[in-house]
Image 1 (cartoon, one colour):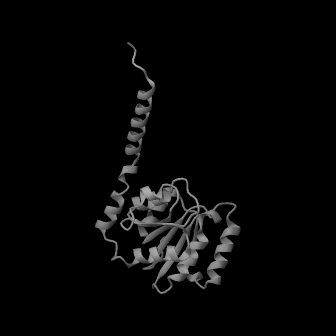
Image 2 (cartoon, helix red, strand yellow):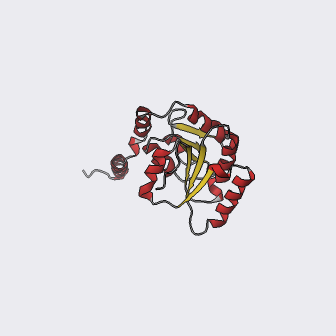
Image 3 (cartoon, rainbow, N blue to C red):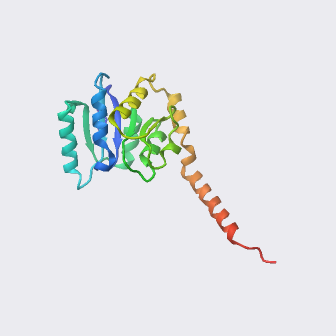
Amino acid sequence: QYLDFGNDKIILFVGRIDPLKGIDKLIKAISYLQNIQGLRLVVIGGGEHSQREIEQLQKLSWDLQIQDSVTFQGLIKHEQLPYFYSAANACVLPSYYESFGMVALESLACGTPVVATNIGSLKSVIRQGETGYVITDNAPHHLADKIALLLSRPNTDTESALSIRASVSRFSWPNIAEMFIKECQRVLASYLVPTP
């Protein structure tokens, strides 16, 4: 019911609707890409205090005359997000700040490449030119350039989606738990003095 976008090329944003997330820069980037047939930006997110920000972003898309290429999907249940990530051609994180960048990890785990600003831990998650791009800032032309590069790739086949998914397998919960245990053991070993 949600994913009625036909054959559109989907650029996805998932997150809080907040100026800190740089969604306005992404909308401007989409305006640079109007030569790409069937391009659609899908913005997922919201919250009780986001209505004013959404209205400003909608106005921006009207001002840029791309309102028909921008869909504000609202809040989506977390268990439904993989359908959107998997349907997208690219996921974009144009944020000014992220503590880690879980959206990028989720997107990659669904086989969808990511364009993101150099924030949080994204440089350690995204393989430059392979699973996406990390750019120095969220200037619309930088975002547009990298989105265009991802869209110019041959249609994402199962093999490349599997390769993108495999790139983040080290972040699975069992691997994280194992690394955490090893780190705890290392710290304990440095503090425990063997008794004679």
